[in-house]
Length: 228
Image 1 (cartoon, rainbow, N blue to C red):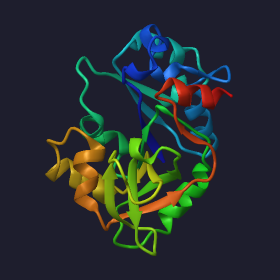
Image 2: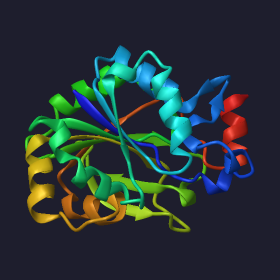
Image 3: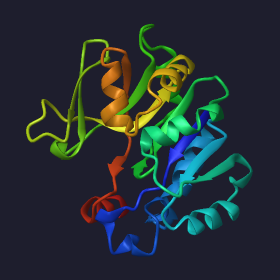
Image 4: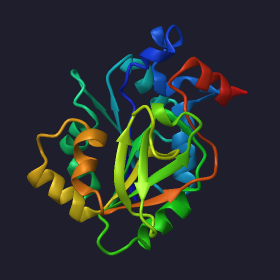
């Protein structure tokens, strides 16, 4: 299974660390965040990869060139950020008409990706994607999902003050080939995946909850927690 890793963001909340280092390369216990993603996905048989770049892109390019994954990675530079949906739409051909994974690679995630894919393979028949979820201690800062008894999303609460629970979207998805085709045909003007694409498919998104480490390292406090 192929994967697009979204790794072009500025990481403004992590300044000054990200003044001279792209967020996707911040070290977690001595390892660049992107290295952790590529290692864990590769071990689960998820290859090859497409990674978008923008901010301090030369550092990302140098990292990939010196990494053991360089033969499996296609880098796509964006002079202007396309948005999470925009990058997906621009690179739909990368998936070669098969199911594929979309990853917001700015989280620290040690999930069991093989189990995640198995959950996708056994999703309810009407579901066109599978979303990874996790339990968060700060639900008002996350996109919280509400599920039916089968684990299908029936409601979204994007960074609201009092969400109904603490089950958050991990912004890691397996997308079916049918969904990718639909996005290319009917949703090709979308920019943001979470706020524009996902609401179109409420009732058709299956979920897999990871109980392994999952942290948004976008703030100094969370980044310190990931390294502790």
